Image 1 (cartoon, one colour):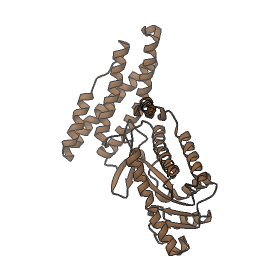
Image 2 (cartoon, one colour):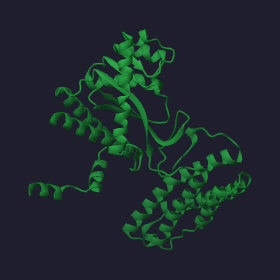
Image 3 (tube, helix red, strand yellow):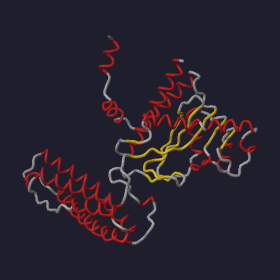
Image 4 (spheres, helix red, strand yellow):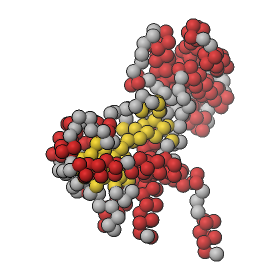
Length: 364
């Protein structure tokens, strides 16, 4: 009877997500460090031997193409301008709806040959540029709206301010998509990832290329785990930095968490470099194992071949821990909007997994 009452009072999944999302990533990370400290006190995870690897969590966006991004931009700007006209009445807003034309051109580009695509792109770019110009005029007009002169209520004035803010948010993003499309399609440039927008809804999403095998759109996560399976740390990186740039930072963060560096560390092959080995050894780590040696000798990394092989095999466990996070706790794809929410989502996944792992250790 008591169990039934507890189940009935349990919040829904959407309510849980809504409340967790209210927390910023910093307190979630702090709570996770508290759990790691508890695990240390309980003897569950001492942090003496750790393993680190990187993975990618995707943002909740469709596969980006220049044509689809331009069509998205026209659709959103047109919707906001139409909303202003419908809700504020006749206050002098003038624009032409080109959404249908943009959508047709975007679909045409998907099915056209390369030579025909350029012609369609030119028309789509013209439509997008015209819509951006309309949106700028409407936003400026909304900024100058006077409640008394236009007979608007306080609620309508707030709505006008909100629509104006959204227009000014999306206008530069659509303008950037227009620029990158012109450079790639019309001028034949190879646009670097740093100059690209892959979503006007999630502009923070980075282009992540994984070993030339596949391209993902989200953020790179560096995750450290211990021998117990506990996830002791995580770093969410901007851009697509190489793994070798992250090794020192991950060891420094372990020192912040435990007050000392680990005795043994196992890394994926992407972290391997002579400089990383030198720096990590200088920090006080006794044995270091990179999955691929990349010119490094075993004697330089560990005190014996047996220790190196043990650490190299130990490293493989982090892949299972990452898979556990993705399959069981949704870390494969974040469906929360905005970069701060993305970080909070990732930390909530790690935090939940660690709570479950600690509970299992305590019970057994």
